[in-house]
Length: 288
Image (cartoon, helix red, strand yellow):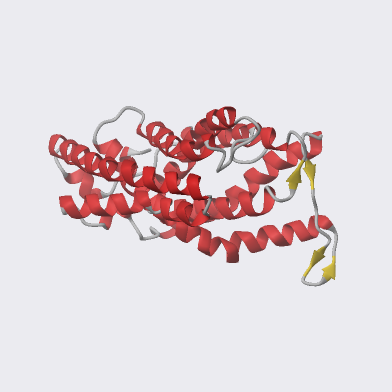
């Protein structure tokens, strides 16, 4: 799946020079990403100001841009083209999946009494059934609110899936999709362990669950990126996920054990993500 979906320009290079170039790119990328991320994460933890987190989300993109400029690689392989029908299909999948995953994970928690659904009865000044208000809110957060969220997510996707993933593949790193997801998950851990992001009653347990979930979620994002040949499906899914899961499902869920089962470090969320990740891994490779 991964190899057949790489840009033709990268496939045309001889294997040895291509691998060496990819390794140089990764070295520059991480040399910039690690210290810059450490600064922004430290400031976010110390000040509690979410603006530092927003800045942090663009550090992968910034590091990849600098690496490209230093190595004079250009930006064609990011790729910002949708890629025709396959690209639009991938965008549609990325748009829908966050809500589907949310309904499966949170809905199971609500149905089993592991968490409680908190529904509102007002929308646009009208009294409506809570389920309808929830559906309207999901629709709004998947579209209008997701625009800003997608801009922030773009900083990550341009770096993680638009640069790092393809360089891991070109460098010959074993299991590059899983490795890229693990790196992405580890990047979040300082905030989780500090209790600043996606942390439940036990930050250590939350960090462990989140890391596995990031590998699963990263697998889905990598598949969208490689199968479509475009970075846009990943940006859409990442942006809609942050908007809908954090902005709607989390706010509609409460209970003493809610954070153990739901949220980005919840066990049910993890299970659903793993199921979808295994599904995409079993899909046949795309044609070159």
